[in-house]
Amino acid sequence: MSDDPKRVDPQEEEGVWSIQGGTPSPGVKEPPYREDGTSSLTYSNPYGLELERVWFDGRIVYACEQGELDVELDRIKFAEEYQVVYGVELDARGKPVREPERVPGQFNIYDSVPGMPKYSPLWRFCYVVVPRDYAPNTLRSEADCLRSGYPIVKSTVVEN
Image (tube, rainbow, N blue to C red):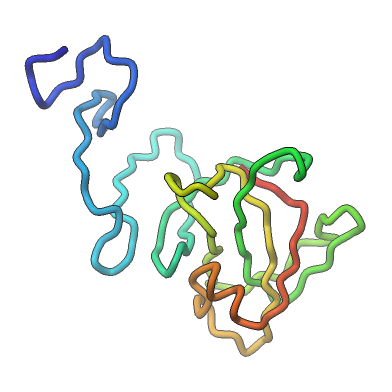
């Protein structure tokens, strides 16, 4: 155990840490969201991954997509990711026939975040089909999508 409260013992295998420049230090419990509802995340993105803003319960969180997976939906746990579109057509396997027509400027919507029982790092796309006069980012939560009255088309597309 390190005598310095600002350092993590080099032999410690895991813990709640903050990492700066490759050096872990004990993590500090801070509110997960700023007052404006945006995640208070600090991330240096050392691998240069593309990040996206995503809605979760009316708050903005950040996500990093790692690609599509071919999985058996009845054998895995997955979370729902809602994508707001003007149109989508799925084939018999539940995959889009062509790229869905996304609403420009609309962030995708997650049903959960880490720490929630229904969270999974695997996301199934559910397409919320809205009319052309829809204002981007009006829908900001799973609850908004479900009570909107707009059709929701569940696909078999899963991403990590």
